[in-house]
Image (tube, rainbow over all chains, first blue to last red; front, side):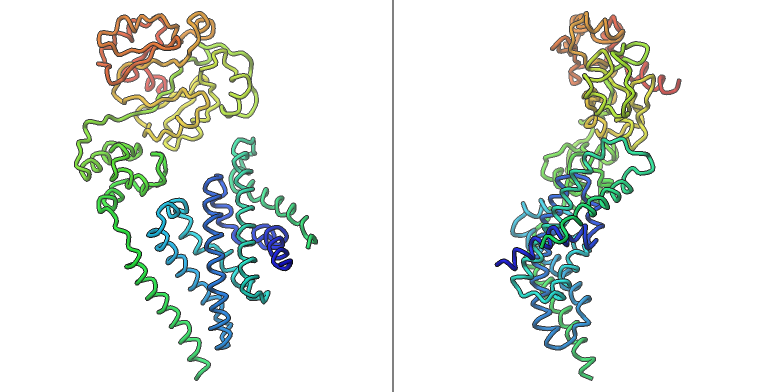
Length: 191
Length: 273
């Protein structure tokens, strides 16, 4: 149990996928301009990452490891994630139109979010078991969610700030991201 | 040989497996789509600008098909798209008129007085926080150009410290309406020939002190209107556009000239000069 807690804290704060591992920067910059879209994306990522890492864990353990073809990991995982997102999208559209509308365009966008692939591969590298895999992917996506919501809050304020013309938009966002990244480095050594 | 067989079989097998699952799922999870929605989606501009208030053109198409949105909801597409949409839905589009945004303030640098000189960030949303802005009139246009900044169609000009919207360039996307902290940009029918260009709810004496061209609440327009198209609330005259017959009596009678005919007198001339 303590182990699970450590994995959660470590993935949310210390090894935050956006600020410490620099994964998923594209959606992080793309959808962090408004708070409600940031929340939508965060929920969708949490959902898909967790599901994808469970499925990839099973495929790694029962197909790739048994046939000793681990070098196919990346391409197989991409295949799995893309099909899974498609499948989940269709299933949600049928079963819960409300949830489908809430997630909106972010669900298909996640196919190309490198966090999903990154988490799946890192889970295997760390040698986690199934429970630890779930904890790690939930933590990773919550960390992404946190980063996204923090950034959205900042950017809503930045809209009104008096920023030099050359720095408006993405430059100032990247600078702010860098500063937040340094701040998150303060968590290092917590566990 | 097995070195080659296993990867090919695995990857091929997984690919085929997922393919089969997805094609079965697409049949199993099939959600019937209204063919109208598809057609409407093609009719709309496809810019996904969100100006209509729905999430992209797809969202508007759904709303149109369900009758939740008027056929002219897409301001960007204008009359052409509205006609097309009406045709698909089997409605008559001539019943709905084109709208444009108008800044309901004429208090420029010469006509309106200032309380103080503002030298902060040039954004009305910020300047309006400082005791309701620099204008003596707390309802007037602050002229920092926040609406100018959000207009994607180059339809807004800042002239003598107030915003003026070009009638022809305005696409009724309503971005400026939403962003104005004073809420003085409103949608009016394109062909209406009388507009009360003042939003001040102050009593007449106060208005006179602040601005040469504000509504002083004299009710002359209300009394003289032959078609009873005026309402009078909170010291301010308002035109009910549905009732207005464009007789322009109010434009002539208004003592402070705050009711104007936008088609003739107003905005183009100012922009040209």
